[in-house]
Length: 346
Image (cartoon, rainbow, N blue to C red):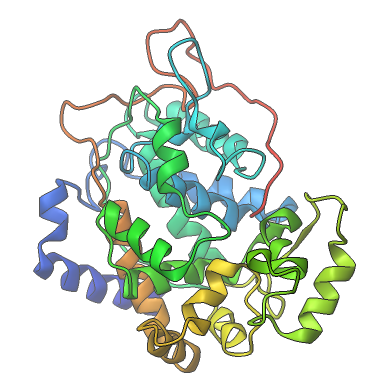
């Protein structure tokens, strides 16, 4: 770990401990110190190799962590495949044909099972992989509290209710963040900054290009030059799965350019641009701060990621540590299943 990274994470950790959030969740960055001390290194190694062939994987993995934590808390319920008793969250609107990276999580789990069998939970793999993805892409690092256990259930209905949709208004976004225990200003804006890397499919923003709010006109908050570019990429009746960069300026780097683009009316998703273009919104000043001060964004993002990772974790004797992230234990499957990846929007 570099000297800068070490100083940053120690200062951040001390600040959060003073707030008491870690003790409330019974999580600790040192949870695996004795049982699997190289867990983060193992996850980082798998992730580093994945980055060599897939520049999108970092954004995809942080999205998995986000979508997992917003449903039942951070318990890896999203990773469960469908069975006769599991209605998989992978089929929810916000995940179906967009969530990806499951096979990389499988590889991380397989490597950890070789090194320290039955110790590291799938929920903790998602949390650690999210932090490593950000850092390897040029963003901040933070001490990841671990000690989560894995759910034995999934909840597709709750996923459909809780995950923000592409046509969400700012009030809708705020409500969904507040409903899970996050705030609708700093947490919302900071975590939205994860859209500084990754991709999105045409189907998630095409309503802004031709018929915004049933007006038969484009979204007036969308820059006209960008509008023309997106209309050429996403014609009416075209292929809705075509991908484009969420951040057109530095698509694979974790930086604060995302917020500058919002100021220029170049946010790709409606849910992005709402943060800056909603009249009178308290999020505008936060966008302006992060655009002018990348350090402030990085610090807020790290704090909000820890807060999100602290949402309703299973600890102690709750849940289990899955041997296969796609299956609950005791079903006769002990090896990690390498299924086909899903089409992605990040």
